[in-house]
Image 1 (tube, rainbow, N blue to C red):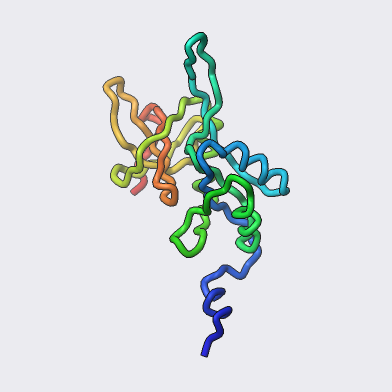
Image 2: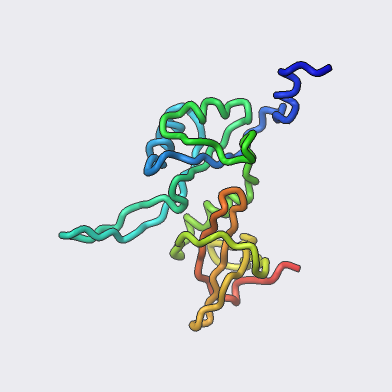
Length: 181
């Protein structure tokens, strides 16, 4: 007969390897949580984009999270309690019973898109479309999906992050992509 401890730890990863996890934050606490995790010596990644905000008297470019309410942390499974104990953290994204790691290539793809000189914008979750690989430019090597062709002969390329149920759209010339069979 199994003990309660054996049942509770049966599905828990036993290795101490670092993996990426998505963190859901309280409303508008992304930067606070990002800084708090870094203060704890943890690696976190908060993808942002520049947005033109307008007030009554002025307009200003401000940096806003690409995925409002989310950021990523790179940590071993055993250290996740340090993340959830951080002020401003709502929960770790997972299946309801435990946090699910995000593949390194997806986080790297988000980094490439954020650092690329082409404009990015949030995009709704997508499942359909042709899977393609970017062959040239700052996003070279990125695998993603084509969502739509615009009248100016450019395509929207979508990087899908399955765990968050969110995507990011980038406008790119179709000559720079190849279809993945």
